[in-house]
Amino acid sequence: MSETLTIALDAMGGDRAPDVVIKGANVARVRHPDARFLLFGDETQLVALLQRYPKLAAVSTVRHSDTVVGASDKPSNALRQGRDSSMRHAIDAVRDGEAVGVVSAGNTGALMAMAMTVLKTLPGIRRPAMASILPTQRGQTVMLDLGANVECTAENLVQFAVMGEVFARAVLGVVTPTVGLLNVGIEMVKGNDTVRTAAKLLQAGNLPITFYGFVEGDDITAGTVDVVVTDGFTGNVALKTAEGTARLCSQFLRTAFKQSLWSRIGYVFARRAILSLREQLDPRSHNGGTFLGLNGVVVKSHGSTDVLGFANAIDFAVDIAKEGFNDKVIAELAQWYAVQGEGAAAAAAV
Image (cartoon, rainbow, N blue to C red; front, side):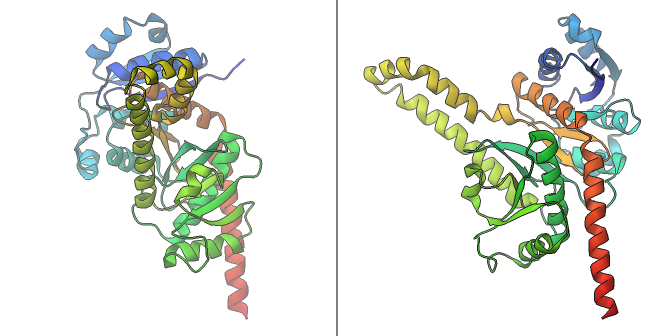
């Protein structure tokens, strides 16, 4: 028998909440019969919506929250004034052991700040990183950080590499993931001091990581490595550029097939292939980034996502929760710090 997993949902977070959240949870319910849901938000609205989905209502519990964290709220203000918000109560449920993870389409900065304050980071982790799965020519690639940390130290990048490598093994099933540092060139003399120092630490560290070296922007979609590591500023720009390019390609295809009668006829014959391409390029299929390095599963959905996108974000949370991800990260980081300590002690003795 499958173990029951309870997921806390910030039902008021996102551009189209709570409607999209409830409908997305109903889709996820079918995919994960062992899942249960804690819904945090305006009780009157949520109960009314659940009446349309009796099977979802049967596996859900509604918890009333008086306030909502707005999309434009500063994280510091959300921390001080949002203690009774749907987002905060959902995170508290993970801390208190009522849920294994939380999914929110709300304010990213506020979610990050609240999650760090309430859940704390794992032993050895200085800063959590937002990670997501991107489609590539070879399959899928894990990329982090995607916006949680605008500036990073070399040690941060090493920790991201460990978490990304464990994630690729646990969630994607890659036996020996390769890890690359995103840089402006593949030569070891390229890049700033931070990425060069991180590369040296990864090369010298006694970690079960297959470090590929530096990779460039086009290596992300090529699938050159299984894990791409970078700072949050660069990662977020790369992610938004990739998503925008996917939408641009879809728009170009639609325009091209409407140009003439012959192109419309051609679409009829190519329709199945076009639909397959559209599905592969659809950002909703890869919606959801998780904050790795926290004492709990926290998944951030795009605020503007639709029903399918939010359901996929719930899928993401369920998959991570089932894999015992955090325990593996703690073990590998402890090994790395032990080796670093031994190296420092040896150097001091010389």
